[in-house]
Amino acid sequence: MIPLAGLLLFTALLQNTPATDPDALEWFRKGEELIGTPEENSPQQTEYFKKAVELAPDFSAARYNLALVYLKQEQRQLALDQLDALIVLEPEGTSGYLLRARVRLEVEDLVHAAEDLEQALELDPQNYDTWQLMGRIRYQQRDYEQAARAFEKVLELRPNPVGAYFDLALSQQSLGHRDEAIKNYRRFLIDVPDDFQANYFLGILHRQAGQDDLALEQFLKAESIEPTHQELAQELGYLLLDRNDLEGAQERLLRSNLDLAINLANLGIIAKRQGEHIQAEDYFHRALQQEPENALLWAQLGDVLVQTESGLEAIEAYERALHYNPEDLDTLYNLGTLYVNEERSEEAIDLLRKALSIDPQHGAAHYNLALVLDERKDFDEARIHYLKAIEYGSDSAWGRLRLAFLWARQNEPTEALQHLEVAFEREPQRYVHLVLDELLKINSDLDSLRYSREFNDLLAKYREGLEE
Image (cartoon, rainbow, N blue to C red; front, top):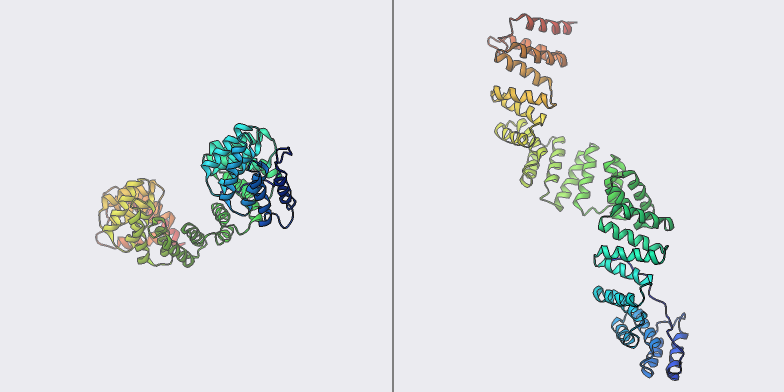
């Protein structure tokens, strides 16, 4: 709720006319004499104004001041009774409507408060204070269009009421009119540079616009004003995390609301990036206590459990992630890969195929699927996926070697030698010896190559390099 401006000061609406009862006038003046003294708003002052009203029920000034005293004493219904009577006495005056609107605002009767202000504006459409109060009511009613119009009217009637720039910017921000809101927050900050909310909201708008340098500038300014503000710490933490300032992000997020899973999760991501996997695991577990059905949190937990070599726990975490989000590509791939490592080939194949149905250009998924199929001796399909892996960026020396063997099995020496040479170039020490060991077998996948000049020249070339 937007804080309203201070209540009207005590104002004597007295018109010193012969019609005013002299005794009532005397009591009224006694009440006025207490304004600015310790007895202001006291029971004594209340009695003075009450006596004036009792003696002269049509004494408007006395009713107005009595309503003010009741309002300061938080006796709102008594204040409303006096204002109802005052408006009956002076239906063409604006003071009664304005004060009654304020009383109604205090009890959150926004509808009737707005009606009073509409009546006051009919009587005096040039009163910018009334327009400002109307704008704040419309804002609380979430009628942001009408709120913005009211604040624009304030600025039209009085070109430089500082608060109106902030109120207008806030309404425009709620409407999604980002550029206009930025302009008016900046205008407000010319006069009030140390206002926390304006700096904070301006940072939010720049962030939404992708202007992260400007957002950082405003957030840091806001932080210098209120360094313990949790929501600011959260937003600043997210921004610094996006900029890969891990220490800065961690510092802010530790000051944010740690009852929120998202903040714990981001602290886990920071720890994960810093290689602090045990700490990351703790943050993800704490976040999952808040949101136990969050697939992304389970997937992040699986990632750090892989790093701590807790394979079975990682599998369980990934399985929970897929339970809540069966189509998550990364989790399908990661769990499929763990199944490969655990020799759970059927499950691995199912998950990797599903991953490739979502992203047919996932090179690593093609490669891991090729490994499983190769192990199962599904050589034709394995060869297809090794080639797809290379096509989509997962080009390993082992994959090249296996392609050499698989093409040789198919009696395709040109293709086999092409891949074998790549494997030799990348890891000659390992793969030359492996091929030599293979040639010792009576029956080998390389039988179609072993007597060819091209194969033996290639082998000699790399053997010679090893011997040197």
